[in-house]
Image (cartoon, rainbow, N blue to C red; front, side, top):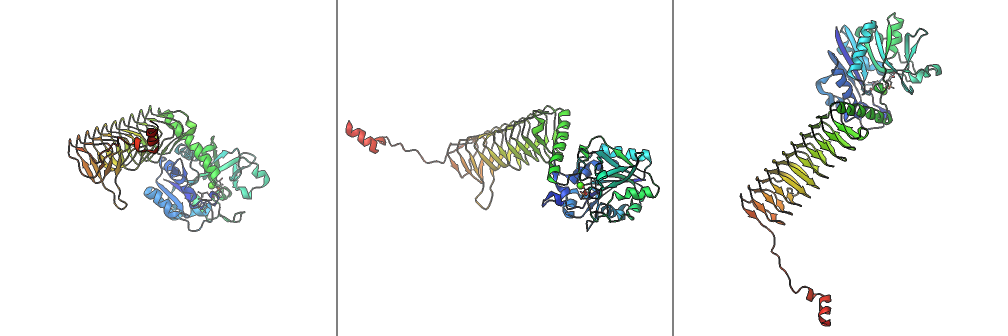
Length: 462
Ligand code: UD1
Ligand code: CA
C-alpha cells in the first residue's frame, strides 16, 4: 500500500491580476505551493506529484526534485488536472491525498488527521470540509436528511438553497487511489464553467455504491483558498500570527507581535527581543540574546548571539557574536562583521571582512576590503573601490588607525599599527607602524581681515 499526494498547481490565477503565477505568490516570504509541499513532506508519503501548467518551468525550478511532475497542457478543470497524474500513480494500491497549491495554511497535522479519519471510516473518498463565515466562491458540501455526504456543488452551479449551505469543501481530499482514477474517467464537463470538476467524483463514487465522507475541521482559517490579493493579504496575516506565536513559544520576545514580520524559514534563538516594524526575511538565522530595534530589515543573513541591530538594513551578510550596528547602517551582501565589531550610524559596507573588535563608527563606506582586528576607522572614511569599470581591494592590518575623512584609493595595503593622517587621500601602500599623510599644507593669511572691504572701512575709521 502506497501513500501518494497530488498538488494541483497548473492554474493561471487570473483573479490575482499578476505577472506571477498564483501558486508562486509568497505568503510569509515563501511561495504558496512550497508551503503545501513542505507540509505534505512532513506526512508519511511515498510519492508526491505536482500538476503544473501555467508557469511550469518556474514551479519546477522552485521545487526541484522534491516532487515529481505531471504536465497539464490545457487547464480543463481540477478533475482533468488530477487525471494527468495517472501515468505516474495509476497502478498503485493505496491512498492519495489531493491538495491545491493555492491553499497555503494547511498543516501536516491536519493532513494526517484526514488520513486517520479516512481510514477509520473505510471511505472511498473523504473530503476535508469546514464551516465558512462567508462560503461564497467555495464548493458546498451537500448532505442528505441523515447527514450523509451526497455531493459537492460549485458556487456557480449551486441553487439558492445550496448557496445557503455554509459547510464548504476545502479542496483537500483523501481517495482510494484506484477508485480515484476510475471515477475521474467518468467526470463530465456539463456545468456552468464547462470544466471537469474533481469534486464530481464524490457523486460518481456514491452512485457506484461506495461510501463517501467528510471530515469537518474546526478551524476555517487554515482552509483558506487564495484566489485574489484580498485573500493573499488574509493568508499572510494568518501565517504571520502562526509564525510569531511559534517564536514566542520558543522564547523570543516580540514587543508587538501584530507588527513583526518574520518569514516562514527564519530561525531565532531564545531571549532574543524584536521591536515593532522589523522584517526578518528569507533564510535568515538569528541567535540568542540578540536585540533588534524598530525599523530594521534582515534578509538572508546570519546574526550570531548577543548582537544588537539598531534600525539598520542587513543583506546576505553575517554579524558575528557580540557585534552591533546602527542606527541607520546598511550592510550589503558579503559583509562579514567580526566578533564585537562596532558599525556605527550612516555606515555602508559591502563585500568586506572585518576583524574582531574593529570600530567603523560614523559616516563611512567600506567596500571590497579586508580589515584586521582592533582597527579604528575614523569618521567619513571612504574606501574608493571603483573606477567606473573595475572594483579594487584594500587591506588594513590589525591595530591600524585610519584618520577621519581619509580616502583610500584601492588597491592599497595598509600595515599593522599603521596610521593615516586625517583628511588624507591615500594612493600608496603604508607599511606596518608607518604613517601616511597625503594632504596639502595649511597656509594662514594673518592679514586676511584687513584686506576685506569691511576690514578696510574699519581701518579708515580708526
Ligand atoms: C476549488 C474547488 C472548490 C473548493 C475550493 C477550495 C473545484 C472545481 N473547485 O475552487 O470546490 O471549495 O477549490 O479552495 O475543484 N487547477 C489546475 N488545473 C486546472 C484548474 C485548476 O491545476 O485545470 C489548480 C489551480 O492552480 C489551483 C487549484 O487547482 O491551485 C484549484 O483551482 P481554482 O481555480 O483555484 O479552484 P476554486 O475556484 O478555488
Ligand atoms: Ca482556489
